[in-house]
Image 1 (tube, protein in one colour):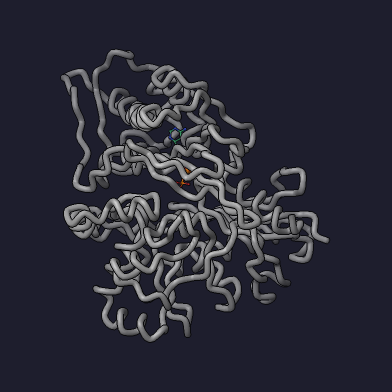
Image 2 (cartoon, rainbow, N blue to C red):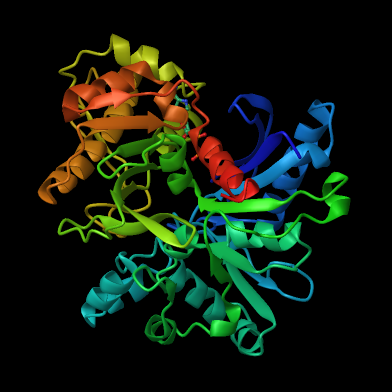
Amino acid sequence: MGAYILAIDQGTTSSRAILFDLQGQVVALAQQAFKQHFPADGWVEHDAEEIWQSCLSCVREVLTKVSFGADQILSLGITNQRETTVLWDRATGEPVCPAIVWQDRRTAEQCRELQATGYETLISQRTGLLADPYFCATKLQWMLDNVPGARERAEKGELAFGTVDSFLLWRLTGGAIHATDASNASRTLLFDIHRQCWDEELLQLFRIPRKLLPEVKDSADDYGRTLPELFGGEIRIGALIGDQQAALVGQACFEPGMAKSTYGTGCFLMLNSGHEPLQSDHRLLTTVAYRINGEVCYALEGSIFIAGAAIQWLRDGLHLIERASQSEQLAQQTDEAHGVYLVPAFTGLGAPYWDPDARGALFGLTRDTGIAELVTAGLEAVCYQSCDLLQAMKGDGLRPQQLKVDGGMAANNWLLQRLADLSGCEVLRPQVIETTAWGGCITGGVAGRGI
Ligand code: ADP
């Protein structure tokens, strides 16, 4: 019996492999960034092949760092960037086009039409989501309509669709298993979160051939084994779970009313609502948190597309800072009444506005506005957006008193203090900050022990 659990944390900007022991200590970690492609305004793409290679090399690197082999690993849990849509050839396993990333807004027009023709109510009732380009269905529809031959091949059953978890699973098992879990399925806009199955009416609405779709399993389940030649032995795959849902698990938000907020590229505030799929009246999403032993735990979610990405922009786009962490010191030096506001709607606005056409803006510039004020405004934008989500939750009668935070930005003490001051919430940061991977590990461990 193995004594370790491996988590693959496949994020938006990098992939990581983390090996945990059964006490939850990190034994070894490897990380690899991969390329972001921005081919047009509002378009964001990844190369699924590069994502696969990055995961493969991270797991191999982790295994070279320890003195034992794959046979000591009890279970592998995969947690992943959600909604990013991959379409691949079943015969070769090759992606047929670039993956369309969750941030991509190219299908804004289709979504407007869905709203105008009154379909949003049906979508929302079945999936808990809204007609927004964020989710998979219109991305997949775009691929089928724009990649030459894709629709015919899809109808013949030659292609497979999946979110990143599915694609990695396919590759890890040598094409033996085409599956996803309920948390990832709940982000496709094609999955009925109440009946827990693909919805025929939505498949017709988006013109998606059923043959493309993966089987939907529990988050902790039997996902087969990795090909022995990949890692010098088979590893049992015990979990697939979306990264934000994994962070909810990793932050131990198991009781209804408990909330976490992850500050990475984007910000995702999620509130456990137990076995009740609560419907928001304030344009928050209802989503599957996880499904274990066939039992669904639901969550209410607010998604913000740009959080840390604003700091990335200040660093890599404007070259105002060299490292993201410098933002903390600059904010400490800035007068609280500086009056500069950044609206980081670079790829539209997510919850609770859902405006794919909005674009960023800077307000309150004066002659003495400098780098420190702009950087501070970037950090404060994250706080203001979080407050908007908390306000929406309050409107739904569900405002949390405590917020468990994680993600790369949660290292910033100034940001967390400002968040606490502006929101009035108690902001808690865990000691183990690898909460997403830890959530993947816990879920994988549940399956590994056959619980
Ligand atoms: P993801 O998983 O989405 O790739 P991470 O959780 O790794 O993202 O967080 C990285 C993001 O956090 C980057 O956008 C970076 O700009 C931001 N970031 C990292 N450290 C800090 C910091 N000390 N202060 C502010 N932002 C930070």
